[in-house]
Image (cartoon, rainbow, N blue to C red; front, side, top):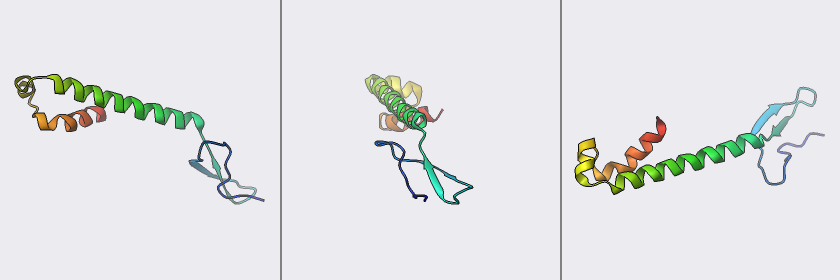
Length: 84
């Protein structure tokens, strides 16, 4: 018997799906390492974003103008810096 959506771990929701050729039903597998890496990557991106916003926020308007950044654009500049 194949249960659709069967959970392998008590606290981790399955995210990957593969086909079992013998049973012909979908079995969900969890990659715990992948989930942990995703959480760590998200946290590091958030930390870098906050650090960039903080550093740019401490600059004077003159320093920001020299960089070509408007004070209202600090958050968007911080988001763009993560994409690079």
